[in-house]
Image 1 (cartoon, rainbow, N blue to C red):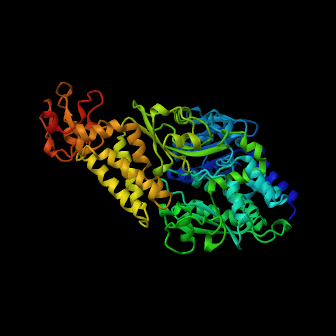
Image 2: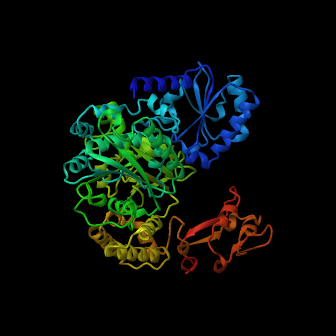
Image 3: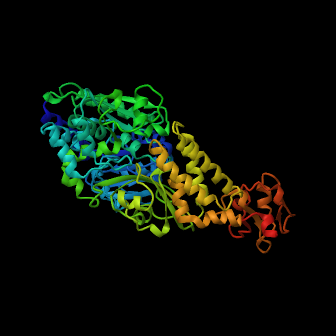
Length: 622
């Protein structure tokens, strides 16, 4: 195929869309946008354009990362600045079209940013403190159109790689400093070299797109917004390692990602980026998609391989490592979605471009899903070494309401909870390890002062216990024993020795478990004890949950001097546990109260007469 003609055609198509004579409207239709109503907005835009007989280009994009402001709509008028609008509803569309398209009057109320052209969107102030390398196409291109990817230099990294030797490609990855983005942070080039040097044929390449962490959606967003980046990275990795077959293991709960991925593979095959004798290089590479059933343990590489082979997804002992004996006993490299996306960008732009960001030992950028009690939730990408304070407050906008920041959990259910005292901690592999946590695949769950850290530890340990495959005793029994102790503590049955016992069992589980799930499952418990031990002690010794979360260790009380007898709380109470006539002070019948908290929510804010009080009512009365 004539690559010059290929790229010229793609460039002309891209220029016609962004620099042509017609207005351009783009709508973010990734999963986050769809859940907020983006498809209804898109249909309303098409309807309004037809009714008003407007000559206009309309396109879909992936997730730009501003999930808190979905649905997102971009409007660009030729010769004018492009505007990104957020929180758009179908009802707003006719007015938006009239003002901005027909009268060139941007609507400031919903504008999130203004740039010269949509491709320059990440220069807008709303993306300050971020640096888009692997996500540079997400939210900018139509993920269903390979020409958009080509117009942004897509597959040029593959073409460059095919002009190098396999060892030359591995050298490029080594010089970039890329480490695995799946959690462990192992140098990518070393894993590739191990596989290439291993005896046995054929060799395999596997992309881990399982992403089972609660609150994590980095990989899904890349698959939905820029699927060709993964495909290009896989082909390059296959060339470097000597693999001719690649598998993408993606959970079935990602239907849109799977749809766009399969569409992209078909397009890549048509253009001969995937298949036999790629660009007459003599290199063959094929890709298959394997849907996983959603087992968290299948994120562990040996369990993932077992699942691809049609077996039950349980880990096996290592060594031998998959790079030596993996899929069907053959040398296999396993990288996650973001790692392979980075590979494509590194070969496109060079190793120095990537290593110019980050720290001495943690090069490049990292994408994170920022969720929880933070104002601006969404998908971000920052240089490694950025502090938690910058991520949570500069990018995330801080904590909503009048609450204070309390902790952030990094690395999903296998990670630890970092307290406010460590807000200036650098987010890199070494710094997080020193704090007792991990980077994981990149989930960040922010918690405010209303979070009970004992209950947080219980929640994540319960998740790990349920997802354990049960193969090894330390994980199967250890997580169950720890969970029983935590449930006793949150229900007011904790004993003086429980904290030390949790630490002892937790360390045993970490040392004795077969795979990464068990080895990291105690992290939420151990870090909350390390940084929030006083909350455990309050639960055990004072029978109080100071955060007001654990039902057995709180009660609700109506403050006499603040109560006006409006009966709002009484009308809302589902168990009729509030007594008192109209305009008289009310009282809660404690033995009938189910501690649902509806009374607090229903009490007018100006009175604030119903309070959640730490401790059992009988203990306080005594």
